Length: 383
Image (cartoon, rainbow, N blue to C red; front, side):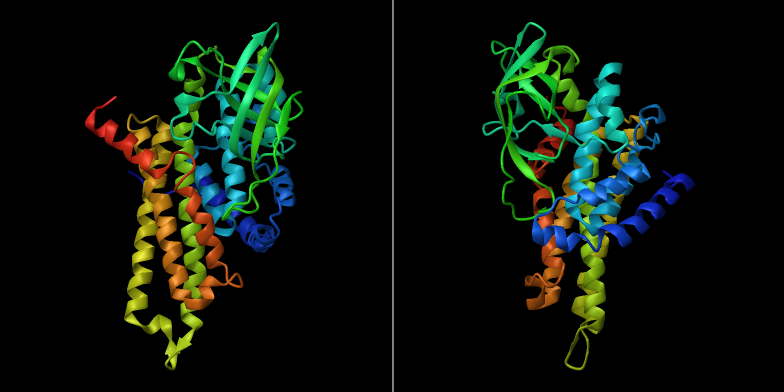
Protein backbone atom coordinates (compact mmCIF):
# COMPACT_ATOMS: atom_id res chain seq x y z
CA UNK A 1 0.00 0.00 0.00
CA UNK A 2 1.22 3.47 -0.88
CA UNK A 3 0.93 5.71 2.18
CA UNK A 4 1.72 8.91 0.28
CA UNK A 5 -0.95 11.34 -0.88
CA UNK A 6 -1.02 12.25 -4.55
CA UNK A 7 0.12 15.71 -5.58
CA UNK A 8 -3.52 16.73 -5.95
CA UNK A 9 -4.32 15.50 -2.44
CA UNK A 10 -1.33 17.31 -0.95
CA UNK A 11 -2.35 20.57 -2.61
CA UNK A 12 -5.92 20.13 -1.41
CA UNK A 13 -4.69 19.47 2.14
CA UNK A 14 -2.46 22.53 2.17
CA UNK A 15 -5.22 24.80 0.85
CA UNK A 16 -7.84 23.71 3.37
CA UNK A 17 -5.23 23.77 6.17
CA UNK A 18 -4.44 27.42 5.43
CA UNK A 19 -8.12 28.27 5.29
CA UNK A 20 -8.94 26.60 8.60
CA UNK A 21 -5.96 28.22 10.33
CA UNK A 22 -6.88 31.72 9.14
CA UNK A 23 -10.67 31.64 8.92
CA UNK A 24 -12.10 28.84 11.09
CA UNK A 25 -9.81 28.59 14.12
CA UNK A 26 -10.33 32.21 15.29
CA UNK A 27 -14.11 31.78 15.01
CA UNK A 28 -14.35 28.38 16.77
CA UNK A 29 -14.45 29.61 20.40
CA UNK A 30 -16.92 32.34 19.47
CA UNK A 31 -19.50 30.06 17.85
CA UNK A 32 -19.12 27.62 20.75
CA UNK A 33 -19.66 30.31 23.35
CA UNK A 34 -22.53 32.01 21.50
CA UNK A 35 -24.11 28.83 20.09
CA UNK A 36 -23.89 30.53 16.71
CA UNK A 37 -24.18 28.87 13.32
CA UNK A 38 -21.03 29.62 11.24
CA UNK A 39 -22.88 31.00 8.24
CA UNK A 40 -19.94 33.18 7.18
CA UNK A 41 -17.69 30.11 6.93
CA UNK A 42 -20.17 28.22 4.75
CA UNK A 43 -20.51 31.22 2.47
CA UNK A 44 -16.74 31.22 1.98
CA UNK A 45 -16.79 27.45 1.44
CA UNK A 46 -19.29 28.04 -1.35
CA UNK A 47 -17.15 30.74 -2.95
CA UNK A 48 -14.08 28.47 -2.84
CA UNK A 49 -15.86 25.38 -4.19
CA UNK A 50 -15.75 23.32 -0.98
CA UNK A 51 -19.52 22.79 -0.68
CA UNK A 52 -19.53 20.17 -3.43
CA UNK A 53 -15.94 19.12 -4.10
CA UNK A 54 -16.59 15.31 -4.10
CA UNK A 55 -19.13 15.56 -6.93
CA UNK A 56 -18.58 15.80 -10.72
CA UNK A 57 -17.94 19.13 -12.38
CA UNK A 58 -21.28 18.97 -14.21
CA UNK A 59 -22.99 19.53 -10.86
CA UNK A 60 -20.57 22.20 -9.65
CA UNK A 61 -18.05 19.96 -7.89
CA UNK A 62 -14.43 19.01 -8.46
CA UNK A 63 -14.74 15.22 -8.61
CA UNK A 64 -12.36 14.65 -5.70
CA UNK A 65 -12.18 11.29 -3.92
CA UNK A 66 -13.06 9.99 -0.44
CA UNK A 67 -9.47 10.51 0.70
CA UNK A 68 -9.88 14.24 -0.01
CA UNK A 69 -13.15 14.20 1.91
CA UNK A 70 -11.34 12.67 4.90
CA UNK A 71 -8.56 15.25 4.56
CA UNK A 72 -11.13 18.04 4.50
CA UNK A 73 -13.03 16.86 7.59
CA UNK A 74 -9.82 16.16 9.55
CA UNK A 75 -8.41 19.62 8.88
CA UNK A 76 -11.67 21.41 9.64
CA UNK A 77 -12.20 19.41 12.85
CA UNK A 78 -8.71 20.37 14.07
CA UNK A 79 -10.02 23.92 14.27
CA UNK A 80 -13.77 23.50 14.82
CA UNK A 81 -15.65 20.23 15.26
CA UNK A 82 -19.00 22.03 14.84
CA UNK A 83 -18.12 23.19 11.34
CA UNK A 84 -16.78 19.73 10.54
CA UNK A 85 -20.05 17.96 11.43
CA UNK A 86 -22.10 20.51 9.48
CA UNK A 87 -20.02 19.72 6.41
CA UNK A 88 -19.77 15.95 6.83
CA UNK A 89 -23.58 15.73 6.98
CA UNK A 90 -23.98 18.10 4.04
CA UNK A 91 -21.47 16.32 1.81
CA UNK A 92 -22.31 12.78 2.90
CA UNK A 93 -25.80 11.83 4.09
CA UNK A 94 -27.27 15.01 2.62
CA UNK A 95 -25.90 15.40 -0.92
CA UNK A 96 -24.57 11.92 -1.68
CA UNK A 97 -27.98 10.15 -1.81
CA UNK A 98 -29.18 12.70 -4.38
CA UNK A 99 -26.09 12.09 -6.49
CA UNK A 100 -26.20 8.30 -6.24
CA UNK A 101 -29.94 7.69 -6.49
CA UNK A 102 -31.68 10.85 -7.67
CA UNK A 103 -33.06 11.44 -11.14
CA UNK A 104 -31.38 14.04 -13.29
CA UNK A 105 -34.22 16.43 -12.46
CA UNK A 106 -33.57 15.98 -8.71
CA UNK A 107 -29.84 16.49 -9.20
CA UNK A 108 -30.48 19.75 -11.01
CA UNK A 109 -33.00 20.83 -8.38
CA UNK A 110 -31.09 19.86 -5.23
CA UNK A 111 -27.50 18.77 -5.89
CA UNK A 112 -26.42 21.61 -8.17
CA UNK A 113 -27.38 24.42 -5.73
CA UNK A 114 -25.88 22.37 -2.88
CA UNK A 115 -22.54 22.25 -4.63
CA UNK A 116 -22.38 25.95 -5.40
CA UNK A 117 -23.29 26.95 -1.86
CA UNK A 118 -26.89 28.08 -2.29
CA UNK A 119 -28.27 25.04 -0.44
CA UNK A 120 -27.28 23.21 2.72
CA UNK A 121 -28.36 19.58 3.01
CA UNK A 122 -29.67 17.66 6.03
CA UNK A 123 -30.48 14.05 6.88
CA UNK A 124 -33.47 12.80 8.90
CA UNK A 125 -33.37 9.20 10.09
CA UNK A 126 -33.41 8.91 13.90
CA UNK A 127 -36.73 8.77 15.77
CA UNK A 128 -37.65 8.53 19.47
CA UNK A 129 -38.04 4.75 19.14
CA UNK A 130 -35.58 4.18 16.33
CA UNK A 131 -31.96 4.97 17.15
CA UNK A 132 -29.60 2.07 16.60
CA UNK A 133 -32.61 -0.03 15.47
CA UNK A 134 -33.57 1.83 12.31
CA UNK A 135 -35.90 -0.98 11.24
CA UNK A 136 -38.34 0.34 13.87
CA UNK A 137 -39.12 3.57 12.01
CA UNK A 138 -42.66 4.83 12.56
CA UNK A 139 -42.67 8.09 10.62
CA UNK A 140 -45.11 7.25 7.82
CA UNK A 141 -45.76 8.44 4.29
CA UNK A 142 -48.95 7.62 2.41
CA UNK A 143 -49.22 8.31 -1.31
CA UNK A 144 -52.24 10.36 -2.35
CA UNK A 145 -52.23 11.18 -6.04
CA UNK A 146 -48.95 12.81 -6.99
CA UNK A 147 -47.93 13.51 -3.37
CA UNK A 148 -46.83 11.71 -0.23
CA UNK A 149 -48.43 12.76 3.04
CA UNK A 150 -45.91 12.37 5.90
CA UNK A 151 -46.76 12.13 9.58
CA UNK A 152 -44.37 11.52 12.45
CA UNK A 153 -41.27 12.87 14.14
CA UNK A 154 -37.51 12.85 13.60
CA UNK A 155 -35.01 13.74 16.33
CA UNK A 156 -31.38 14.87 16.63
CA UNK A 157 -31.27 16.38 13.14
CA UNK A 158 -27.97 18.10 12.27
CA UNK A 159 -28.23 21.33 10.23
CA UNK A 160 -31.85 21.58 11.35
CA UNK A 161 -33.41 24.94 10.61
CA UNK A 162 -30.62 25.87 8.18
CA UNK A 163 -30.87 22.96 5.72
CA UNK A 164 -32.69 23.63 2.45
CA UNK A 165 -33.84 20.01 2.33
CA UNK A 166 -33.70 16.80 4.36
CA UNK A 167 -33.06 13.28 3.10
CA UNK A 168 -35.83 11.60 5.07
CA UNK A 169 -36.44 7.92 5.79
CA UNK A 170 -40.14 7.05 6.10
CA UNK A 171 -42.32 3.95 6.28
CA UNK A 172 -44.40 3.80 3.11
CA UNK A 173 -45.87 0.34 3.71
CA UNK A 174 -47.17 -0.16 7.27
CA UNK A 175 -47.96 -3.80 6.51
CA UNK A 176 -44.27 -4.64 5.95
CA UNK A 177 -42.19 -4.73 9.10
CA UNK A 178 -38.47 -4.04 9.20
CA UNK A 179 -36.36 -2.43 6.50
CA UNK A 180 -38.37 -3.54 3.46
CA UNK A 181 -41.19 -1.11 4.24
CA UNK A 182 -38.90 1.94 4.33
CA UNK A 183 -38.48 4.51 1.56
CA UNK A 184 -36.47 7.72 1.15
CA UNK A 185 -37.92 11.12 0.30
CA UNK A 186 -36.37 14.54 -0.21
CA UNK A 187 -38.32 16.97 1.97
CA UNK A 188 -37.77 20.65 1.17
CA UNK A 189 -37.57 23.12 4.04
CA UNK A 190 -40.74 24.86 2.82
CA UNK A 191 -42.79 21.67 2.48
CA UNK A 192 -46.31 22.29 3.86
CA UNK A 193 -46.67 20.59 7.23
CA UNK A 194 -42.95 20.47 8.13
CA UNK A 195 -42.33 21.95 11.59
CA UNK A 196 -38.75 22.62 12.70
CA UNK A 197 -38.21 22.56 16.46
CA UNK A 198 -35.98 24.78 18.56
CA UNK A 199 -32.26 23.90 18.78
CA UNK A 200 -31.50 21.33 21.46
CA UNK A 201 -29.09 22.35 24.23
CA UNK A 202 -26.13 19.98 23.96
CA UNK A 203 -22.86 19.24 25.76
CA UNK A 204 -20.79 20.24 22.75
CA UNK A 205 -20.86 21.04 19.03
CA UNK A 206 -22.61 24.27 19.97
CA UNK A 207 -22.08 25.82 16.54
CA UNK A 208 -24.00 22.99 14.90
CA UNK A 209 -27.77 23.25 15.46
CA UNK A 210 -29.54 20.00 16.34
CA UNK A 211 -33.34 20.00 16.18
CA UNK A 212 -36.39 17.75 16.08
CA UNK A 213 -38.58 17.71 12.97
CA UNK A 214 -42.34 17.15 13.14
CA UNK A 215 -44.35 16.16 10.07
CA UNK A 216 -48.02 17.13 10.26
CA UNK A 217 -49.68 15.99 7.03
CA UNK A 218 -46.51 17.18 5.35
CA UNK A 219 -46.81 17.18 1.55
CA UNK A 220 -43.94 16.01 -0.66
CA UNK A 221 -44.08 15.35 -4.42
CA UNK A 222 -43.83 11.69 -5.42
CA UNK A 223 -40.96 12.59 -7.76
CA UNK A 224 -38.90 13.47 -4.66
CA UNK A 225 -38.58 9.76 -3.81
CA UNK A 226 -35.12 8.21 -4.21
CA UNK A 227 -35.32 4.72 -5.78
CA UNK A 228 -38.47 2.63 -5.62
CA UNK A 229 -40.70 2.29 -2.59
CA UNK A 230 -39.20 -0.04 -0.01
CA UNK A 231 -35.62 0.64 -1.13
CA UNK A 232 -34.78 3.13 1.61
CA UNK A 233 -32.23 0.80 3.16
CA UNK A 234 -30.31 0.75 -0.13
CA UNK A 235 -30.00 4.53 0.05
CA UNK A 236 -28.66 4.36 3.60
CA UNK A 237 -26.17 1.61 2.76
CA UNK A 238 -24.96 3.60 -0.23
CA UNK A 239 -23.60 6.36 2.00
CA UNK A 240 -22.88 4.36 5.16
CA UNK A 241 -19.20 3.51 4.69
CA UNK A 242 -18.15 6.97 3.57
CA UNK A 243 -20.05 8.57 6.45
CA UNK A 244 -18.42 6.42 9.11
CA UNK A 245 -15.00 6.98 7.62
CA UNK A 246 -15.26 10.76 7.73
CA UNK A 247 -16.59 10.70 11.31
CA UNK A 248 -13.38 8.80 12.10
CA UNK A 249 -11.52 11.60 10.32
CA UNK A 250 -13.37 14.11 12.48
CA UNK A 251 -12.17 12.21 15.56
CA UNK A 252 -8.58 12.35 14.30
CA UNK A 253 -8.86 16.09 13.69
CA UNK A 254 -10.32 16.78 17.13
CA UNK A 255 -7.57 14.77 18.82
CA UNK A 256 -4.82 16.37 16.75
CA UNK A 257 -6.06 19.92 17.31
CA UNK A 258 -6.35 19.36 21.06
CA UNK A 259 -2.88 17.82 21.24
CA UNK A 260 -1.34 20.78 19.40
CA UNK A 261 -2.66 23.16 22.06
CA UNK A 262 -1.43 20.82 24.79
CA UNK A 263 2.09 20.52 23.42
CA UNK A 264 2.38 24.31 23.32
CA UNK A 265 1.10 24.50 26.89
CA UNK A 266 3.39 21.89 28.48
CA UNK A 267 6.43 23.52 26.85
CA UNK A 268 5.72 26.89 28.45
CA UNK A 269 4.07 25.88 31.73
CA UNK A 270 6.64 25.76 34.53
CA UNK A 271 6.50 23.89 37.83
CA UNK A 272 9.39 23.41 40.25
CA UNK A 273 11.54 25.71 38.14
CA UNK A 274 11.29 23.96 34.78
CA UNK A 275 8.75 23.34 31.97
CA UNK A 276 6.50 20.39 32.74
CA UNK A 277 7.39 19.00 29.29
CA UNK A 278 10.76 18.03 30.78
CA UNK A 279 9.06 15.47 33.07
CA UNK A 280 9.25 11.90 31.82
CA UNK A 281 5.64 11.20 32.81
CA UNK A 282 4.43 14.08 30.62
CA UNK A 283 6.64 12.93 27.75
CA UNK A 284 5.28 9.39 27.92
CA UNK A 285 1.68 10.59 27.90
CA UNK A 286 2.37 12.84 24.90
CA UNK A 287 3.96 9.88 23.09
CA UNK A 288 0.94 7.70 23.82
CA UNK A 289 -1.38 10.34 22.39
CA UNK A 290 0.73 10.67 19.25
CA UNK A 291 0.57 6.90 18.77
CA UNK A 292 -3.21 6.84 19.22
CA UNK A 293 -3.69 9.63 16.68
CA UNK A 294 -1.37 8.07 14.11
CA UNK A 295 -3.01 4.63 14.46
CA UNK A 296 -6.45 6.22 14.03
CA UNK A 297 -5.30 8.20 10.99
CA UNK A 298 -4.00 5.07 9.29
CA UNK A 299 -7.33 3.31 9.82
CA UNK A 300 -9.22 6.33 8.49
CA UNK A 301 -7.21 6.71 5.31
CA UNK A 302 -7.19 2.98 4.64
CA UNK A 303 -10.98 3.03 4.93
CA UNK A 304 -11.17 6.03 2.58
CA UNK A 305 -9.00 4.22 0.05
CA UNK A 306 -11.09 1.06 0.38
CA UNK A 307 -14.20 3.15 -0.32
CA UNK A 308 -12.64 4.65 -3.44
CA UNK A 309 -11.49 1.32 -4.90
CA UNK A 310 -14.67 -0.54 -3.81
CA UNK A 311 -12.71 -3.01 -1.71
CA UNK A 312 -14.78 -5.95 -0.39
CA UNK A 313 -13.74 -5.13 3.19
CA UNK A 314 -14.81 -1.47 2.94
CA UNK A 315 -17.62 -1.91 5.47
CA UNK A 316 -15.36 -3.36 8.17
CA UNK A 317 -12.67 -0.78 7.42
CA UNK A 318 -15.17 2.06 7.82
CA UNK A 319 -16.46 0.71 11.14
CA UNK A 320 -12.90 0.28 12.43
CA UNK A 321 -12.03 3.83 11.40
CA UNK A 322 -15.13 5.28 13.04
CA UNK A 323 -14.76 3.28 16.25
CA UNK A 324 -11.03 3.76 16.77
CA UNK A 325 -10.88 7.33 15.48
CA UNK A 326 -13.61 8.60 17.80
CA UNK A 327 -12.44 6.59 20.81
CA UNK A 328 -8.99 8.09 20.24
CA UNK A 329 -10.55 11.56 20.19
CA UNK A 330 -12.22 10.99 23.55
CA UNK A 331 -9.10 9.48 25.14
CA UNK A 332 -6.69 12.11 23.81
CA UNK A 333 -8.86 15.11 24.70
CA UNK A 334 -9.46 13.78 28.22
CA UNK A 335 -5.73 13.30 28.72
CA UNK A 336 -5.08 16.80 27.38
CA UNK A 337 -7.47 18.30 29.92
CA UNK A 338 -5.59 16.39 32.62
CA UNK A 339 -2.25 17.80 31.51
CA UNK A 340 -3.64 21.33 31.69
CA UNK A 341 -4.57 20.70 35.32
CA UNK A 342 -7.15 23.11 36.71
CA UNK A 343 -6.82 25.32 33.65
CA UNK A 344 -8.04 22.46 31.48
CA UNK A 345 -11.41 22.65 33.21
CA UNK A 346 -11.80 26.33 32.40
CA UNK A 347 -13.35 27.76 29.24
CA UNK A 348 -10.44 30.17 28.93
CA UNK A 349 -8.49 27.31 27.34
CA UNK A 350 -9.70 25.35 24.29
CA UNK A 351 -9.07 21.79 25.48
CA UNK A 352 -12.36 21.54 27.40
CA UNK A 353 -14.21 22.42 24.16
CA UNK A 354 -12.38 19.69 22.28
CA UNK A 355 -13.30 17.18 24.99
CA UNK A 356 -16.98 18.19 24.92
CA UNK A 357 -17.05 18.01 21.14
CA UNK A 358 -15.31 14.62 21.07
CA UNK A 359 -17.91 12.76 23.11
CA UNK A 360 -20.75 12.75 20.61
CA UNK A 361 -18.55 11.36 17.83
CA UNK A 362 -18.67 8.04 19.69
CA UNK A 363 -22.46 8.15 19.40
CA UNK A 364 -23.63 9.47 16.02
CA UNK A 365 -23.27 7.75 12.64
CA UNK A 366 -23.79 4.46 14.50
CA UNK A 367 -22.61 4.14 18.10
CA UNK A 368 -19.24 2.54 18.67
CA UNK A 369 -21.06 -0.42 20.20
CA UNK A 370 -22.86 -0.87 16.86
CA UNK A 371 -19.51 -0.70 15.06
CA UNK A 372 -18.31 -3.64 17.17
CA UNK A 373 -21.38 -5.59 16.08
CA UNK A 374 -20.81 -4.73 12.40
CA UNK A 375 -17.18 -5.82 12.59
CA UNK A 376 -17.82 -9.05 14.51
CA UNK A 377 -20.67 -10.13 12.22
CA UNK A 378 -18.50 -9.65 9.16
CA UNK A 379 -15.51 -11.44 10.68
CA UNK A 380 -17.61 -14.31 12.04
CA UNK A 381 -19.73 -14.60 8.90
CA UNK A 382 -22.98 -13.91 10.77
CA UNK A 383 -26.04 -12.26 9.20
